[in-house]
Amino acid sequence: VMATVDADVATIILKMVDQLEDSDDVQAVITNFEVSEEDLAKLAAAG
Image (tube, rainbow, N blue to C red; front, side, top):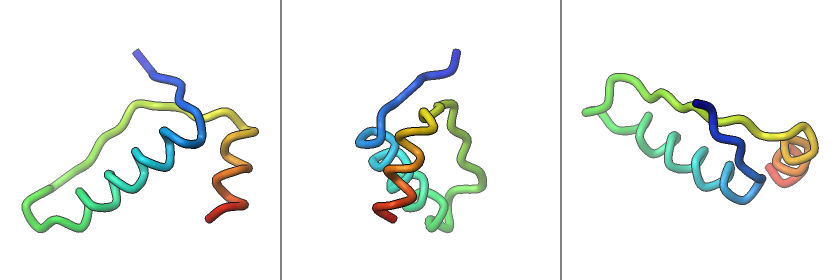
């Protein structure tokens, strides 16, 4: 099952994934979400 999230939730998820990937104790991070094209554009503009 894939979750569809908005730009605000995607921002939170992406920050959490970045923090997990930076940890030496984590070998892999897997997510299962999608973001609309419109929200991706918002993220790109904000980023």
